[in-house]
Each structure stands twice: as C-alpha cells, then as structure tokens.
Length: 579
Image 1 (cartoon, rainbow, N blue to C red):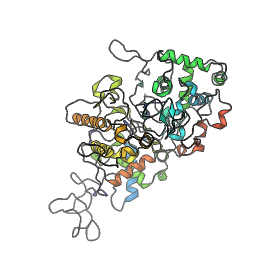
Image 2: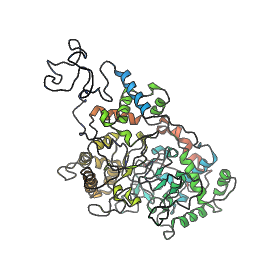
Image 3: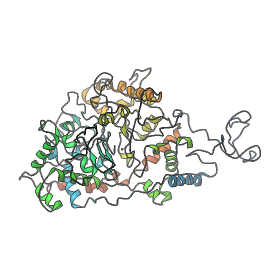
C-alpha cells in the first residue's frame, strides 16, 4: 500500500497548488467576474465610469478604440484568461491556450518504456498485490488501500489497513472502501495517518513517493528510503538493501508490508525491516502454495526473494498507465477534445496570477501535472497524525520536516499528480476535502476554507449542524456506527488545522522561515472555479471509470481457482457486491 505519494497535502499536500508568488484577494461569491479592461472597456475612473445605464458596453454608438479610446497598454491590459474579447470567443480562447502550450512546452504523455499488464512480471506482481499472505497477520494486502475500481486508492479519507471490520463488528478483510472500519480501535478510528494516494500512473513518477517523499531518487540516480543510513554529515545514504537498477516503484513496495498499521500488524514486531521481509519471502516459499511456479513463469527459475517480490509489485504498478484523457488527446492534436469550458479552465490553470490566471501550473507542472518539490498550503489536519506535537496531543503532522529534520519544511507535502483526479477523491494528505471545488477554494483563502469545513465562527468550530467535515463519507459512517458526535470523534481537528494556517500566516509575515509556502490567493469568481474544475476533470482517462476496462488489473472470483495461495483478496463493497 502506498503512503503518500504520486505524493493525487491533493497535497492533497495537494490537489491543486496555486501561484506561490501572487498576492491577490479571496474568491468572490457574487457571480461572473467583472470583465478585464480592454478595448472599449478601460479601467473605471473619473470620466470613465463602470458600465451601466447611460454608460453601455461597447456596441453600436459606442465605438471601438480610436482617438480618446486607446488600444490596450500599461494600465489597460487585455482581457484575462477564460475571458476572451467579445466577439472573438472560441478562436481567441484556442489561441490563448495554444500560446501557453508552446511557452510551457507542454507535450502529450507516452507509455513508452513502461510494461504491459500482459507481461509475465506484472502478472506475478498482480497476484502479489492481491495476496493477504504479504500481510503480517494475513488480514491485509496491498490492494486493501489501492483497488483499481476505487481510483487506485480506497475512497477513504484515512486508510484502514489491518484487522478491518464492518458495521456489525464482523471481520471484513475483503470489504474495501466505505464501511471498512478499524477493529483494533475502541472507536473504530483509522490508525493510518494519511490519505492513500492513487497507484495509477506510478510508472510516470521516477523522483519521489509518499506524501513526504521518504522514498526519493537523488540526482545521482541512487534511492534513499526509510532504511537508509545517515552519514557523518547527517545526510541519508542510498539504501544499500535495494538491488542494482531498482525502480522507484519497487523501492516503495518494500515499505507498506513493514508498517504495523497498514499490513504488518503485530507480527514479528521485534524484527527489523529487512529481516522481516525475509520472513515474508520464506512464507511464500511454503510447499503448500504455488508461488514457486509463479516465480518460475516470470523469472525462469523458482527462487522467491523479497527483492523479486518488490520488483514484481512495482512492475504491476508501473503497468497501470491511464493517460488517454481529453487533455492528453488535445496535446496530441485533437483541438476538439476539450470543451470551451475546459479550455478556459486550462488557460486559468497555466496562466500566472500576473496574467489574470490561477497559477496552478507553478506547482502542478510537467506532463503529469505533479510537483517536484514540497509545498506549504495549509490543508486541514485531522486523524492520528505522525507523532508531532499538536494543540493538545501528539497528533499533528509536520510532513516533509519529519524526513529532513529541517523546520523550513514544516507542514510541507508533495503536490501529487492531477492525472485521473476525478476518481481519486477525497483530496489532500488527510482526505479532508471531498470535492475539487473545495480544493480550489482552499487556495484562495485557507483560513476561510477551514472555517467553512468545520462550521467555525469566531474561532469556535461546529457552531451548526452543517459542517462539511461531518459529511465526509468516512466521518459520517463513524458517526452512524459509534453514535459519537462529529466533534468528539476528532476533537483536535479544527485546532490542529488552524495551527497550520497560523504557521503559514507567520511565514507570510516573515516571522518564521519556510521553503515553499503558498503566498498568493487567486482571485477567482464562481465561473472561473467551475472552469478550473472542468479542466481538472478532463485530466481523467475514461478507462478508470469502466470496470471492464480495468479488468486486466483485478483479481476476482474468476481467477480465484488458479491463484497461487488460498488468501487472495477478492474485494467487495459494503453491500457484498464484487468490485
């Protein structure tokens, strides 16, 4: 199971990172944006009032630029992104977008060099991904938190790994998604501290994995991981447990199995990571399983090692290439692959704030629209955290600082890829936002968005019964199951979230340092928010919405008879329907 990466604080951090250098106002709720100054629409001022009765918009009797009505220039710029000149419409919008594509050298994505799911190694990895035999207590598999039908994730804000139960407190290891609860907690709260990132298009990411980047390929090509030793200078060395030529996906696959909350449980808790992995490999070598024969098909010999296990799982993940989105088709030359609304959103997305845009491409860049670095964007913090001091207990999450030890990285999280983002909700490193609109609005005003999320007024959360936080599917399920109030489930959620916002404000005030904080607030109206959301949804490959299309990556009842052991996870939803 992958933790925080690819990392879709979606941050997380973040599902949509806006221009970090802009200094603008908040989202306006009052309808379409007032048109930008342009020909026939100069900046309001003395003798140049806003349009209205007696001062009509350009048209008959209100001529185009000429003497006394100058062409655009300093102080009288052209209309902004998503708001083309009247009468030019689609053509002007297409020109704006094409200009940005050329300037930013945006290009379509290719699956060249990545494996096919039909290849022997990804086929082996598929079986390994779905077996509970890699779970210490045999109650969880990689797929427990990363099922293809669930967007390559689990649809939960915070994942439930080992010892899952259902609403009736019955063991439910094969129940995935909503209705999956933690049987090891008295309140059934999830113990995994972060939202599970999607595994879709993992092969396109060869730099960092997890929300905090704890598995990372350095500039020299070597990979550092949580198993890396520290040199005399205090820097992490390359992980010497990794075989030569290991992919980033294979390196990442070595760690969910060692996590007590994700897959390990309390099994062999006294062993270090590498010794524990060898125990798992020996388990698969058991004569009562068919794993040796499966490895023979992939490697031409039947040796089962954990290096091979991780490599095969990594190749399965790397085979999940879903890039046939309207946006990718547009970049391939299909100009009609995007609607006008989606094109307007793309122009806003890639235009900087000083161009009238949202500046999202500052952090979500490249062919995968992901970030190479880590950003402080102050997404909400709730859940068990990572042991960092919060307002009341150690349930805060310092993010990247936990890896580097540098307080300039506090609350920084990796900007995930936005590919297929329409199916990877909820968003952010804690899955605190259920919709893309909430994510977009967060960047305009983090404090206001968090107050809205928790229905806070004058610093007091949950002042009414309409807090969106309580409507998050996982939170609502916990309320219904346990009978607790929303506030009592996570009493520190609001205060911890505001603590992060205060840190961001202190950074903006120059009181504390930060490596890459959100400095700007895109000034977007409702129409522009909708355009941005439409564009981001156009980053989704239709295949990820189609169960039949996803079938090659799924182990179901049809494959159960030939599975290498008797512990395949045949996933079902809360109603008992197969995924």
